[in-house]
Length: 139
Picture: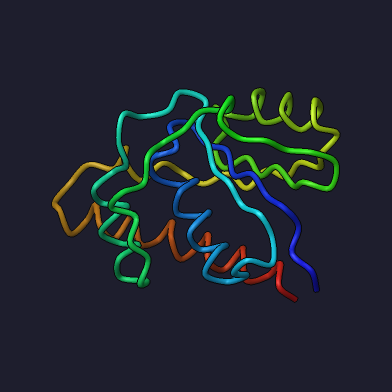
């Protein structure tokens, strides 16, 4: 199966969407163009996200969050919205580009409180759920 070009959209492009972008790249390589963005980009990538992605062999330490205006989509692109707060913006991006849209809503692990280990576990759970979802697209 050929992988579609993809844009992952979430709230701040600091946790879920960069995870998804890196996992997509790991799974499909250069087979498709993949980008990620947020509706209100953070100033930097989340440290816990960087740590749990390092466990997967992905170095996102130099990742810089970007906004919707920093990505491009066209017909044939799949826009994947990862956060309910990004639904409207993702839908508008897909409509402008005549792209398809899917909603894969995942909780924001940055909102979890608790010990460092409890927080890391929340990030790992999201990472693993994203990886499973991406793996289903390879079938």
